[in-house]
Image (cartoon, rainbow, N blue to C red; front, side):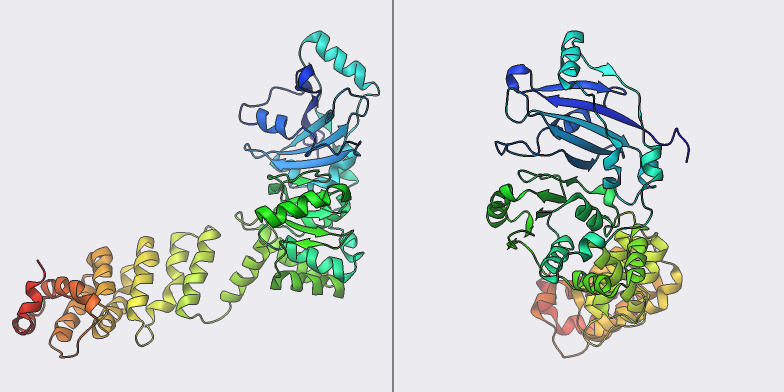
Length: 449
């Protein structure tokens, strides 16, 4: 790694109370973009309602709209003349820098601050603006950072704490951990496919709606438990009092728990690595999506599973030809009574991929089956959407419509309108057969108007 790569842009803010102007930018390596400046300003404040006592320095992190990640250290200013006064330095890390670290909390040792904070503020006021600073060189910190995840903070917990914590982290809600530490948060982040897309705070005094993972001091626990019960927008795991709120169990969390306790880190880390190859995967719950996709890709699929598989492929950014190929099991033929369902699936998902003409014989067989089963609405919708792409299949389907019209068995009443349209479309393909059927069904045909 080069020295240039590890020079991180930075910005220093202070909150001095409204009577002293509120936010004050102390220093920066350059002006922030308009889309980023208010974001960094707001998240430089104290992380929630003041508890009325000093809090230790803490760290926050969150992705920025330009692809960088802001990792910040906030210090509570005990000697200030207002509540909530803090000083925050934020490092702005590029995607290239992010790629070299397991998670952002490994940069906790990257910060320092001036010995005289009062003089720093007076200098800014005297200059009526921030001063320039050089980028922070992170090379030494990064060189000393571990290259492999450290799960020991998780393994140090007993199962009564570890299991609900993993279930919460693998769920869909942000997680607040009462009594959590930066080391514990780092171990959880290592289980996420993209930890740099997640917001974090190691000392949340109130719920941070942008943070996927928050450590909460015990004094603020009640705030989070009450909010979780009322708003249902955060899961709370109390490692001190063992209270739980909003935690939903998941097979993925049980699988991770088993791997951790058995010391089987290879399969766990391999799953995380495979999920990281998918750009859309970010949160730990996406590991379950990776597992399910791999299971679907390794066995014969039912019609419903084909749809599920295709949806996974779309999330993973598959090319049109790969999506088209995923529908192949449906072209092999529908189960009895399922031709209409199959045609609807192909119409909505397969036709937009512009499939190859080689599929025409299979399409024709499905159209014939749909006609025989009385699935007029699905058959008509497919022909309107893609019948011109498969002319021979269209002819087979409409000839099957003619045969079905001549049979005495009725179809469902809700299919009537579609069958009237199909009868007229089939007339050029089997004029005598359709005309005879229409003569017998003249009152039914008259309802078309």
